[in-house]
Length: 181
Length: 111
Image (tube, rainbow over the protein chains, first blue to last red):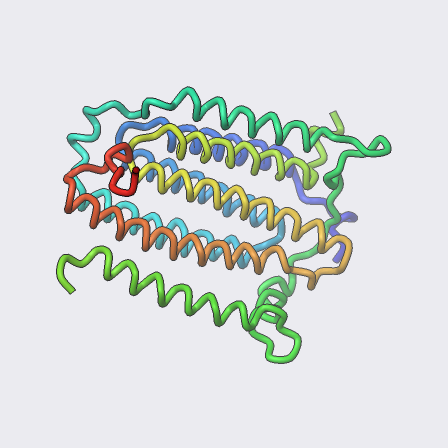
């Protein structure tokens, strides 16, 4: 099935709506006093991003995003927020003394982004303007082929190393968080 | 108008850059360590969005099985999980010693 013959309906509106949700969620994450509110805003951002992954025909990454990020990592964050007392930090100043320098540095970085994204060589911008439509059939199989296949899997060794990284992270987290080992 | 209505890879890159900037502002200006860690998650997600968008563009050139960007996004998510676990463990140890989550108080290694 060729999607160019049967294009998806109202894609730009979904993109701009989800992008607006993500930006507003990100602003709420970095401005809220209460860390729980920040975490909830971050969960909204992550779910909108999962929807954007679906629009990019990456259903497996979207599923991993929802299960691992919104379901796993954010629950970890909420548990830690629950463990540490938040009443006192909410009365304190929320931004540090060098916030002006921080915003200036971020603005410089933003200027760099704008400069790179608007640079043209021979009348064309550096980054691709068009996308080609593909059906998502076989996406999960394709990811699994790259990750797990013994003969053509490019990333099988990296995948095993990632499991080692997770083991080190588990040990590190337990050592850090436990009072006496 | 056509550039507004035809969603290209560049749109996703601009959105990723905006999220990256929000994360950088959060890391540089907030005092609460939990929110600093959440801002790092925002940064990693911006990178992930770029990777998946480039993966889609790469698929348009090399066929539907060229999914390297998505595989990298999965690796980045793995890293984010490890980072969050260790970071929050350090945060709990820090809170137990100093009874605060203020990042300005983390000055043990400051000379």
